[in-house]
Amino acid sequence: MAASMELDLQPLSLELLPTDPLLLILSFLDYKDLMSCCYVSRRLNQLSSHDPLWRRHCKKYWLLSEAEKSRRNKSWKAIFIDIYADLGRYIQYYATLKKAWDDLEKYLLQRCPRMISSLKESVREEDLDAVEAQIGCKLPDDYRCSFRIHNGQKLVVPGLMGSMALSNHYRSEDLLDIDTAAGGFQQRQGLKQCLPLTFCIHTGLSQYMALESVEGRNCYEIFYQCPDQMARNPSAIDMFITGSSYLEWFTTYVNNVVTGGYPIIRDQIFRYVHDKDCVATTGDITVSVSTSFLPELSSVHPPHYFFTYRIRIEMSKDALPEKACQLDSRYWRITNAKGDVEEVQGPGVVGEFPIISPGRVYEYTSCTTFATTSGYMEGYYTFHCLYYKDKFFNVTIPRFHMVCPTFKVSTARMETNHNERAMDEDEDSTDTDEYEDRRRILDIPAPSGRCPRQT
View: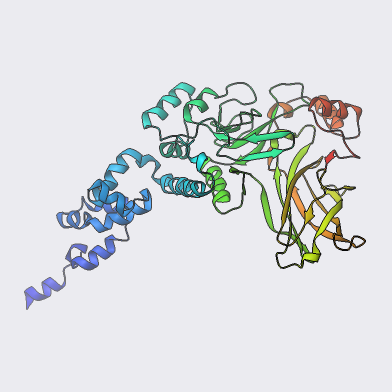
C-alpha cells in the first residue's frame, strides 16, 4: 500500500505519457524545439525523430512535395537537415520567395512562355559571398535567398519586371543577374552604396536598392532615381520609392501579375493598375480605365508627374446589330490636386474614329501630366449610330485617379543655403519663363494652359 502511494506521488513527466499523446504534443513544436527534444532523453530522441513530424516542416519551410521526397529517397528529417545545411540562413524567407517564383513561372508558362526561357539558374552561396567582397557591402538575406532560387534573367525583351509602351516611348525592365547588378553597383554621390535590381536597355532606367542608410535613404529601400533638374549640384537625385525591402517589392509585384492585376499584352507584362470601381456603362457600352505612373518621364523638381492610361471600350455581345456606332469626339475634364480644372475637347481618340459593334472591344493608350502629385480625369465620348446617322449620344468615361508613388527629396537639395532654396521655390512655378526653358531641356511637351497635356 505504501509503495503504491509513493508511486502516485511521483511528479508527472512527459516521458511517462503514452506514445500517441506524446507524439501529438511534439507535432505542435517548431523545428528548433523539435530538434532540442532530441537532446533531452533517449525516449524523446526517438520520438522526435518520428518521420511524419518532419514532413510538416519540410512542406512548411521548403515547400517540398511528396514526389521530391520520393526522388531524394531519404527520410523527411534527413531531407530537412540537408536543405537546412544549405539554406538555413534563409528559412524565414525561402517559402515565401519560392512560392512567388513558382506562381510566377506557372502563370507565365501559360501566357508568356518565351519569358520563362530568359530566367537563369540559381547561384551558389560562395558566388553571393564573392559579390559582397567585390562591392564591400552586405546583401540582405531576402535578396540572397531569391538568387538562390533564380539568378535574375538575361538582358532580353520583354523584361520580367514589366513593360510600358506609348507611341514614342518604350520601357521593359529586366531583373538583373547578380554579376550584372554587382557591375552596376554605385558609389558616386547621389547614389552612394546603391545596387541596381532592374535595367531597361531602351531607356537606361533602373530600380535601385540602398545597401546602407545614407543620403536620406533607409537601408534596403528600393527606388527609381530622379535627377533634380533644378539643383546646382549634379549629385542631387530625388527618389520615387517602390519598396521597403526586396521581399515586399518582389512578392507584391508577383501578386499583381498572377492575380491579373497587371495585364498581359502581346506577351508582355504591362504595369497598368485597374480600379474595379473605375467602370461606367452607358446603354450597351462599357468603358473601363487602367492607369500607370512613368517615373522615367517624371520629375520632382520641377514638379512634373507623368501618367499613362489605357481605356477599354466594349459593346455588349447581346446588343442589337443596329446599335453599332462610331466614336466622333471626346471631352475631358481634368482636375489636379489643387482643384484647378482644365477642359479638353477633340475629334476621335489618338487619331482614330473606332467603330463599336456588338461583342467588339476597342482599347487605346494615351497619357497626361500633372504639376501636382495627383489628379483625376473624367468625361465622355460622343458617338453616332451607323444605322441612324443623325442620332448622336454620349458615353460616360468614369472618373479615374492618378497618384504618384511616395518620393524623397535629395539631401543635396536640402543642404543648400536658404537663398538657393528660396530661388528654387520660385522656379517651381509653372508660370515662369525659366520653367519653360527647363521643360525644353527635359524634352517635356509644351504646356496647354497651366499643366502640360497630351490627351
